[in-house]
Length: 112
Image (tube, helix red, strand yellow):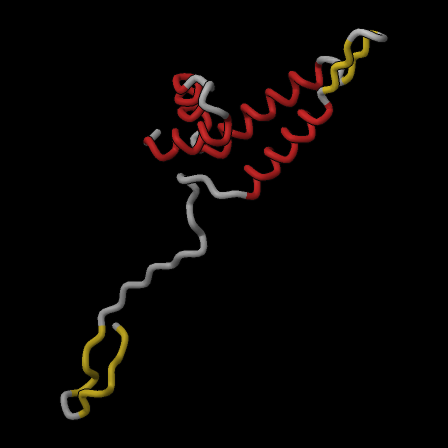
């Protein structure tokens, strides 16, 4: 994993994320986007495991539903976005050698 991929992953997942864990996941999964989606999915599953709302009448109210919404938006953003190691399908490189078709008409060219 190169520094650009690590920087992108830390930007997506937060700087407190363990780089060694990210490296191990990257080795296993092979792409930065897959690593980010796996970590975000684990965070989402952990959040869903616990109650989203809890109220102790007159004392405290905890509401994690906005955190869940934020994680789901971030997962969608990573799925639609581009990671630094994504293969680019929209770029096509063509190498062609051009030479004159005949010597009398230098302005005519043919592809080899």
